[in-house]
Image 1 (cartoon, rainbow, N blue to C red):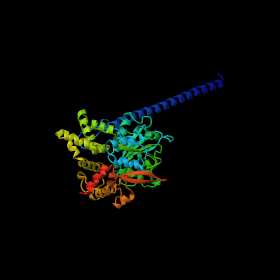
Image 2 (cartoon, rainbow, N blue to C red; image 1 turned 90 degrees about the vertical axis):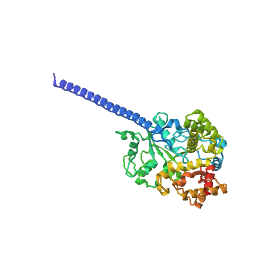
Image 3 (cartoon, rainbow, N blue to C red; image 1 turned 120 degrees about the vertical axis):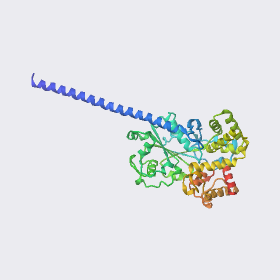
Image 4 (cartoon, rainbow, N blue to C red; image 1 turned 180 degrees about the horizontal axis):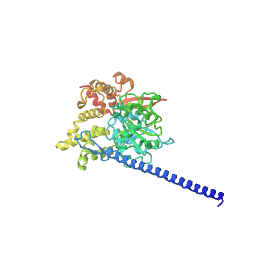
Length: 454
C-alpha cells in the first residue's frame, strides 16, 4: 500500500478517535451537570422538609412544658393595606368602637394579601424589598413564620423563590462573633453539607425574611465602604444585615422586613425603592374564626364570641391578635372553673394589664429599662409614667394624634419601651410628609389615662 494511503487511513482513525473522545467528554459533562441538578433538587426537597418541620408548630405564650399548637390550625388571616391613610381616616380608625370599627377596617380601599406582596404594582416592576409594618402584638412575627411554612409546603411564592430564609433581629443582637451571609443561610438549613455556592448562583430566586427590625439595639449607620459585597465575607452581624438591606450583597435577592412603625425612619435610610404594607389586625369575621380555632369546640367558641361581641370595648380591641388571645385565654379558664362569663366584662382593665405585661415580656429584653430579673419583667415606672401623662393630656385636650412637640413636652424619645405603645403615622402635608404618633386605640389611651391617676 502506497505511503500516502497509509497516512490517509491513519488520519481517518485519528479523527474518529478525536470524535469519539469529544462525544465521551460531552456525555461526561452532561452526566456531571445532571448529577449536580439531582443533588440540588434533593437538597431543595430536604430544605423544604426541614423548614416545614421547624415552622409547623408554635408554643402558646402560656404553654406547659411540651405543649404545642399547630401554626396552620391557629393562624388566622389578617387585614393588610398597602397605602398610607390620611390624617382624618387614621383618627376615625382610632376613635371608633364596636361594629363601626370593624366596618371601617373592612372599607379600606387598598386591602391586599401576603400572596401578592411581590407582584408588579400598576406600571411598576415587581418590588425587591417589601416592608410589612404593624403595631406591637398585631401579628408580624406569626405572619413571617406562616410565610415560611406556606412556602415550604408549596402554597406560596412557588414560582418566585427557590429558597426562603428567616433572620430574627432579636437574635442578631446577641451575636458577638463575626459572620457572613452564607452563615445566615446555613443557620436556616438542616445539619450536614449545605450547597451554599449553588444556592447563591441564582440570587433572584432568594427571599430573606428579616423579622423585627425595630428590635435591633443600635442604628445601622455604617458607611458603604465598610459593608460586605461577597456573601462569604465575615463581618459583625449588624454589618452583614446592613449589607443585605442596602443591596450591597446579593443585589438581586428579595427582602421582606417586618417592623413596628416607630422604626420606619431608621429603616428607610437603609433601603432602595421599598414597597410598604401595614397589618391592621383582625376583621370581624377573622375574630370569629380565631375564637373557633382557639377553643376547638363549636359550642364554647360560639358562646365566648357572642358574649364578647356584645361587649363593645372587648370586641373592638379584639382586632389586635395578642388581645384576642388574652381574652380567649381568660374566658377559657373561666369556663373550666364554671364561672360566669359576665365576670370578663368587669375585667376590661385586667385585659389591658395583661396586654401590657405580654407586650413587655414578648418584645422587651433591654435590661436598661427593667427593674428586676427576667422572671419579673416590670417596666421602668418613669417611662410608663411619661406615656400615661401623654395619654392623660391627650384625653383632656381631645387629642389622639400627637406631634414631636407633644412627645418632647413629656420627655418621650421613642426608646424601646415607649415605642411598644406608640405607633408612628406618616401623612402627606403640602409637598412634604409629617409624622404623628398615636396609641393603638383610644380605649387604650383612656386606660393609660386612668393609670396616670394611680
